[in-house]
Image 1 (tube, rainbow over the protein chains, first blue to last red):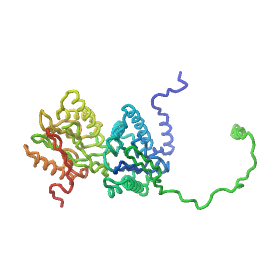
Image 2 (cartoon, rainbow over the protein chains, first blue to last red):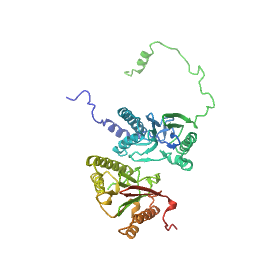
Image 3 (cartoon, chains in turn red, yellow):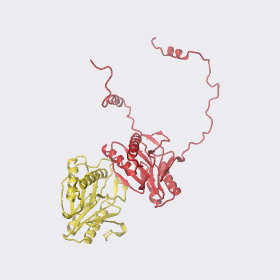
Length: 266
Length: 212
């Protein structure tokens, strides 16, 4: 006797057959939404500045024109994510949760190296299959820190970093302008310029610039710090004048009328 | 034999270690690449696993960082449990165990070098596959192929600390010139019973070379 309800343990491969059928009929399998992306981070006099564009792509289509790529990890730490959007969201969320418990357990503010270690060990375990390329920045008792974490689990500690499809564009800005001990305004301006280099010259990046300034004891999350791609005002109003569609009348019990219309037994 | 997976960060590299009476000199370039892009031009490939024991990493950045972190953990535990510092041989043995048992999933070519009370300076090499070798000096990484002749000809047993430093600077400098996956600055470290002295040699301070 087969069970009426299928057990819900283990993996379900029902969709494999469906996907094969669709692909045989010529329907392309949808690609995972990637963040294309330009993300950057830099160290300045008082802390770190993180920056990101806001375009999420699904192949050649823009899936989200204003997504958030700077993720909260802890009150003193944020993480920019490039690569597969689901992976960056999930991974940063998971490690953020682990950090909260860690902070409560130790009775201390979480350290940036702790987040870096948790992230790299998780990504290494999945051997690159979790497509998250991250820029982690924060300020803790040992000072400001900036790390870059690749999908396979390698990390680099640097004073300025860029990741994503627009990283080369952004890096050219940093390599020509960065110097130690920048002021807050110089740092934010440089980050804005770096992200805009990605927005305008990389097809995978676009829309706005989000910025996050982290200093000792304070975080300033500036959503939409620069918006160089606002839609132009439409040239005319496309509103239909009242009376364009002939209005016959209305009837109570519209639901029942609908059901009758759907009856195809004849 | 595992090659790097597409998109994996590569330590390309030229690394070396030379023994002298009283310690070791270790050296590395500073380039980390992803395909043709240099992801980090100031990498530190000389990684501390114990106070006086370092490893030089080449191959996959992720694999070598993960392995070094695990060995560092084991050596820390060793020190706590034995009440004394581990020998370089112990560290090398730990590296070998991990590299050999996981040979199908790792891309790592590592040199372990340092100072211990038992032997003084000591150098070990663990190529891909996880075999363990104990030469007087070791060179590894993609850039090492260009300098094996130079090293075999230049090395003399019984060199002083200063001679070893010049030898390492020259060798890594030559490898950087010829190998595309090696570049940046030359990082050096001298490990003796008194501690670790670190040095950076920039491009304009390289020993003389023919450059055309």
